[in-house]
Image (cartoon, rainbow, N blue to C red; front, side, top):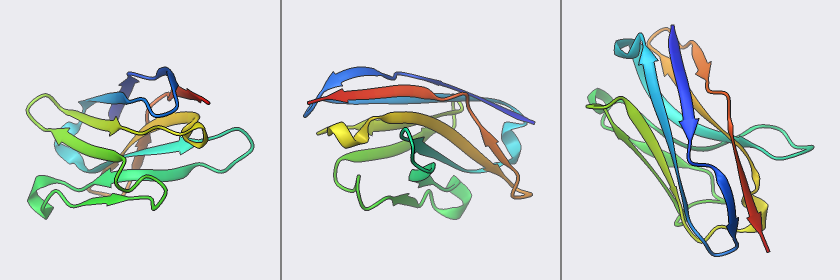
Amino acid sequence: QVQLVESGGGLVQAGGSLRLSCAASGSIFSIDALGWHRQAPGKQRELVAMISSITTGGITRYADSVKGRFTISRDNAVNKVYLQMNSLKPEDTAVYYCAAVDSWAKMYWGQGTQVTVSS
Protein backbone atom coordinates (compact mmCIF):
# COMPACT_ATOMS: atom_id res chain seq x y z
CA GLN A 1 0.00 0.00 0.00
CA VAL A 2 1.03 3.56 -0.71
CA GLN A 3 -0.19 6.59 1.20
CA LEU A 4 -0.12 10.07 -0.33
CA VAL A 5 -0.58 13.37 1.50
CA GLU A 6 -0.83 16.67 -0.38
CA SER A 7 -0.11 20.15 0.89
CA GLY A 8 0.32 23.64 -0.50
CA GLY A 9 -3.09 24.51 -1.89
CA GLY A 10 -4.79 27.80 -1.21
CA LEU A 11 -6.19 31.01 -2.63
CA VAL A 12 -4.14 33.05 -5.10
CA GLN A 13 -4.84 35.87 -7.53
CA ALA A 14 -4.66 35.29 -11.24
CA GLY A 15 -1.07 35.48 -12.44
CA GLY A 16 0.25 34.23 -9.13
CA SER A 17 2.06 31.04 -8.20
CA LEU A 18 1.59 28.09 -5.89
CA ARG A 19 3.66 25.02 -5.17
CA LEU A 20 1.96 21.79 -4.28
CA SER A 21 3.78 19.02 -2.44
CA CYS A 22 2.90 15.38 -2.05
CA ALA A 23 4.58 13.09 0.46
CA ALA A 24 4.53 9.37 -0.26
CA SER A 25 4.86 6.66 2.37
CA GLY A 26 4.29 2.95 2.68
CA SER A 27 5.44 0.68 -0.14
CA ILE A 28 7.30 3.47 -1.88
CA PHE A 29 9.73 1.01 -3.48
CA SER A 30 6.87 -0.14 -5.68
CA ILE A 31 6.00 3.31 -7.02
CA ASP A 32 6.54 3.80 -10.72
CA ALA A 33 4.95 7.00 -11.94
CA LEU A 34 3.76 9.93 -9.86
CA GLY A 35 1.42 12.64 -10.97
CA TRP A 36 -1.12 15.33 -10.31
CA HIS A 37 -4.74 15.33 -11.39
CA ARG A 38 -7.41 17.93 -10.79
CA GLN A 39 -11.16 18.07 -10.65
CA ALA A 40 -13.17 21.25 -11.02
CA PRO A 41 -16.81 21.44 -9.91
CA GLY A 42 -19.07 19.69 -12.40
CA LYS A 43 -16.14 18.38 -14.43
CA GLN A 44 -14.33 15.09 -14.74
CA ARG A 45 -11.00 14.53 -13.06
CA GLU A 46 -8.18 15.20 -15.50
CA LEU A 47 -4.47 14.56 -15.64
CA VAL A 48 -2.41 17.69 -15.09
CA ALA A 49 1.14 16.34 -15.07
CA MET A 50 3.01 13.11 -14.47
CA ILE A 51 6.60 12.02 -14.07
CA SER A 52 7.96 8.52 -14.52
CA SER A 53 10.51 6.81 -12.31
CA ILE A 54 14.21 7.55 -12.56
CA THR A 55 14.79 4.06 -13.91
CA THR A 56 12.54 4.87 -16.84
CA GLY A 57 14.10 8.28 -17.41
CA GLY A 58 12.03 10.63 -15.26
CA ILE A 59 9.92 11.47 -18.29
CA THR A 60 7.35 14.21 -17.77
CA ARG A 61 4.02 14.73 -19.44
CA TYR A 62 1.66 17.69 -19.16
CA ALA A 63 -1.87 18.57 -20.12
CA ASP A 64 -1.89 21.06 -22.98
CA SER A 65 -3.67 23.58 -20.78
CA VAL A 66 -0.75 23.81 -18.33
CA LYS A 67 2.29 23.39 -20.59
CA GLY A 68 4.77 26.18 -20.04
CA ARG A 69 3.14 27.21 -16.76
CA PHE A 70 3.35 24.13 -14.51
CA THR A 71 6.40 22.02 -13.68
CA ILE A 72 6.35 18.62 -12.02
CA SER A 73 9.37 17.26 -10.19
CA ARG A 74 10.15 14.46 -7.77
CA ASP A 75 12.70 14.06 -5.01
CA ASN A 76 13.19 10.38 -4.36
CA ALA A 77 15.47 11.08 -1.41
CA VAL A 78 12.50 12.41 0.57
CA ASN A 79 9.76 10.56 -1.32
CA LYS A 80 8.02 13.68 -2.52
CA VAL A 81 6.59 14.98 -5.75
CA TYR A 82 5.97 18.65 -6.42
CA LEU A 83 3.88 20.73 -8.77
CA GLN A 84 5.10 24.27 -9.33
CA MET A 85 2.23 26.30 -10.76
CA ASN A 86 2.97 29.70 -12.29
CA SER A 87 0.84 32.21 -14.17
CA LEU A 88 -2.26 30.74 -12.60
CA LYS A 89 -5.62 31.35 -14.22
CA PRO A 90 -9.14 31.21 -12.77
CA GLU A 91 -9.74 28.09 -14.86
CA ASP A 92 -7.02 26.34 -12.87
CA THR A 93 -9.35 26.39 -9.86
CA ALA A 94 -9.95 22.80 -8.77
CA VAL A 95 -9.17 20.18 -6.18
CA TYR A 96 -5.72 18.84 -6.99
CA TYR A 97 -4.98 15.20 -6.28
CA CYS A 98 -1.63 13.51 -6.02
CA ALA A 99 -1.56 10.08 -7.66
CA ALA A 100 0.87 7.19 -7.79
CA VAL A 101 0.99 4.09 -9.94
CA ASP A 102 2.87 1.06 -8.71
CA SER A 103 4.65 -1.69 -10.60
CA TRP A 104 1.42 -3.67 -10.81
CA ALA A 105 -0.44 -0.71 -12.34
CA LYS A 106 -2.42 -0.15 -9.16
CA MET A 107 -3.34 3.48 -8.62
CA TYR A 108 -3.29 5.37 -5.35
CA TRP A 109 -4.77 8.78 -4.57
CA GLY A 110 -4.21 11.48 -2.00
CA GLN A 111 -7.09 13.23 -0.27
CA GLY A 112 -6.82 16.33 -2.46
CA THR A 113 -5.98 19.97 -1.87
CA GLN A 114 -8.06 22.93 -2.99
CA VAL A 115 -6.55 25.51 -5.33
CA THR A 116 -8.62 28.63 -5.94
CA VAL A 117 -7.53 31.31 -8.39
CA SER A 118 -9.38 34.60 -8.19
CA SER A 119 -9.74 36.92 -11.16
